[in-house]
Image 1: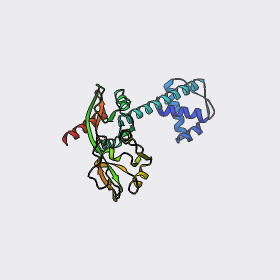
Image 2: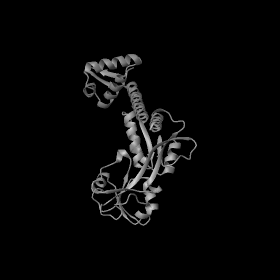
Image 3: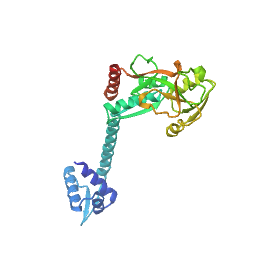
Image 4: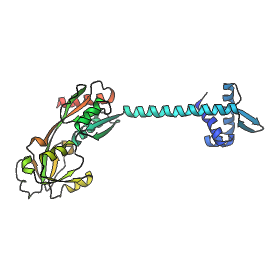
Length: 284
């Protein structure tokens, strides 16, 4: 019994006639008729009542149609399940607390595994750890060592923030500034900055934050805004800030070390990407 025969049987039942089924299947009517004759021979029972040149499904044939549709449905579901599993094996699910280390991990994946896919969510550190531990996420990026014993970790990158100021700003000529000196200033910030938002809220309680959700709009505004903006030293996210004074923030709130975490029993693509990132960092 062949799948084409089951599809043909289904088409005859759906279209009502042999000729209509042949047209739907884009085969000749004699070829479709011969295929049904072979199927009847395999079952050793007639599936059609034949009156002259007209054939109609009999009760046995209708039973065969019901089973053929179930088989075809199961085959379709099997193919969908296989495709979904294959996509999952080619996709790494990552939770991160900040955008810069995610960009680094994405670039590492593109370098080492260019055919694979990375999906991400920005979450709180505790959520990242929990979801990596329970297998919801393949990898996580946090700004400290993991507290869960079942997780492996490696250092991924350091990040430090500077402040970009209008050239006539009173702090623009300084070699560095502290959070206390910046507290009370107005900042234009990107909404999705992860755990950095909690840090700046805590360290700059008297400052005003104007949020911009669209990164493209934010990138255009930050070159001309009269307000302060934060700038990362991540080399793959640097942008020439013409007409702005870049002043390093000499404060713990502006420094972070990010760790990449993974379950100790992880295998496959996530494990290979983790090892690639760990080996790369150790060589630097």
